[in-house]
Amino acid sequence: MRTTRTRDGRVAALLSEAGTTYAEEAGIRVADRPAPLWQLLVLSNLTATRIKASIAVDAARELFDAGGGTPAGMTELTWQQRVDALGRAHYVRYDEGTATRLGACADLVRERYRGDLRRLAGDADGRRERVEELLRAFPGIGPSGARIFCREAQGIWPFLRPVLDRKALDGADRVGLPTSPEALAALVEEDDLPRFAAALVRVALDRGLADRVRAAAS
Image (cartoon, rainbow, N blue to C red; front, side, top):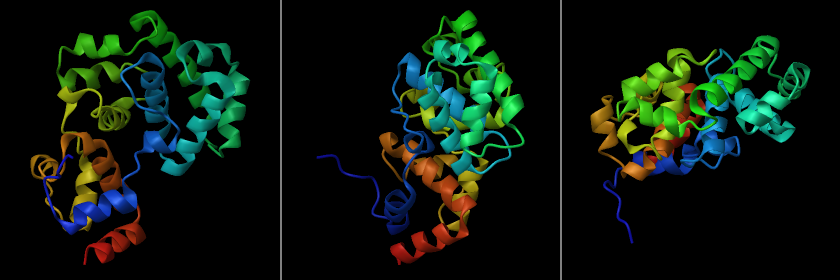
């Protein structure tokens, strides 16, 4: 049986109360395979916009249910079908531009990486900064979307670890944990980093959740 690195009640409470990754919430079974990596790119694109994370997650689910769970599937959807899927998730204000960008992303994945983002990891040669640079080539990703992708993908691409970005550090501060990525990463097993990072982001965005975590740890 694997033992954890820490008995800190705040860490245990975080993982228990808030340790569902956004990818899991969107129904993505993150794995080092073409379809899940594409789905993670879509989710990162949706989440990078100034919109509630819960709406972005719902939008990803709607797009995948409509057939956009692979680059080829997203390309086969018409622009209007993408807009309609986003609308069903109440992904408003950004729906038309996002529908266009997702089509362009699908085309780029197919043309540059032959439909398989594992080739992006190979092109990065084990460097996280290069992964982020390559991701920023996708319309709508930008620095924020690249960090979101890496935060979720660190479970399957170990060379990315640890990915604990500014929002995660804000969450750590809110529940009284260290605010350096290295110190935070030392509190959990490496395989738990995606869940831990997601939990920290969630408490940064939700003061009530942060209060519940602190209460559970006391």
